[in-house]
Image (cartoon, rainbow, N blue to C red; front, side, top):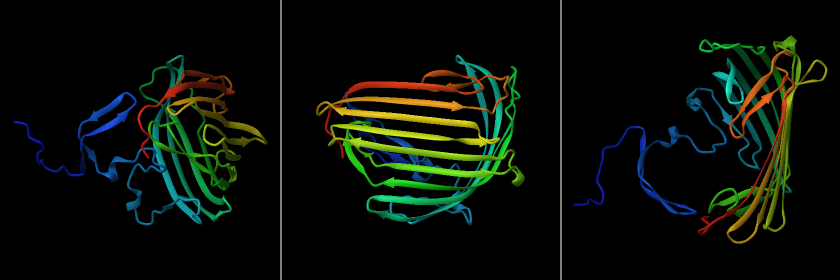
Length: 315
């Protein structure tokens, strides 16, 4: 005898997710029911903020981001204490390992006049403490070159410019989903100064920057441009840990269910954290391994294709 359903005992801290049929280009897929953590403990996919412990239960803890274009002020206090093992690779093989004890604390505040004539301007300022202490790994038996410890304590100021310009599209990065593409002009610059007299390991000018812009000709073709540059300047202008990343994404709707797309990404890293006699390598999760000379490396990637989307869009 087949039973249409039954009652079962509850599980503390878990929620039952019922079975469902999920759409795909090749038909619907059946997903069995399962027990999941409650919403407060399961996390959120692509969450804008992630906390590894319930800081909101701590007395005096506070966090308020710029969560909307018309938000007038923001503030926050955050900290991190992380111990991880860093591995250096050469053609897929580990050539060196060391531990990285990372501690950081940041407090900041920001203010804005809100959204005016389609534009948002925000000012933020804060103080950041960031320290990395490196040590050998007891399980590593090869040659070890330990990077130099570094500690920076610095105030900073940041300016953000955003344009309120979004476009709703379908079947571009996601299948049968309505997507919000940002086409406005956006730019962000943060500059801070760390002084050795105030406890930093080196005097340095630390900076972060980002710029982006989107274009669309009525919805049939879309072009998205983005670039960011970060690092620090020491010894009167020497660039350390400089990272430059630029990307181009282009979409052309060739029909109701056909989309041509191409992406171009250029990445450059200048690393001065190792000694002049050491050559470092970095593992790239998508393209294999990339060798790093002491001066850094450059990488470029082009991806293009045509996608067919079946089914009806889901709003």
